Amino acid sequence: MPSTLAWPIMRDIPNKYLAMGDDWARDGMVLMNKHKVVSGECGGAGLGAILALLNSGLGVDENSCVMFVNTEGDTDK
Image 1 (cartoon, one colour):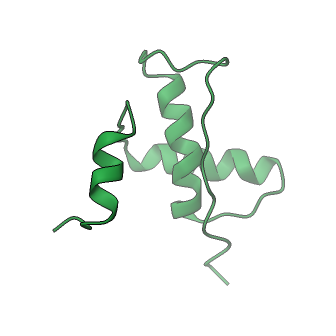
Image 2 (cartoon, rainbow, N blue to C red):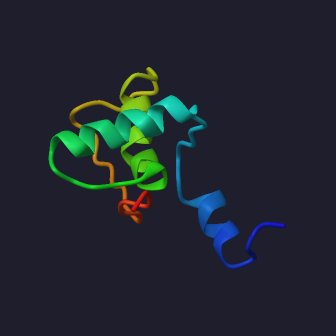
Image 3 (cartoon, rainbow, N blue to C red):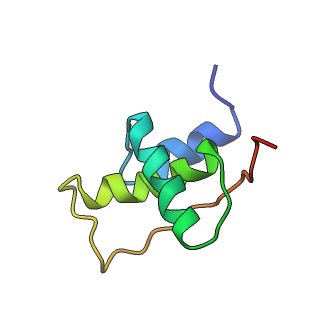
């Protein structure tokens, strides 16, 4: 059951949604690592989603304003 507080926001405000495969999360982790940002799969998924959107043909490009939050550090310690 979706959150009754969050669902109206997630339903009404975004104008695009994205489903993506695990490879995009890995690509996000790799890119962040190249820039010395430590992240796990969940954190990498945010950047991976942006990479997927850039390759999706949905009108997201270098002029778009997007945001993601990396909520996970190194979980393999």
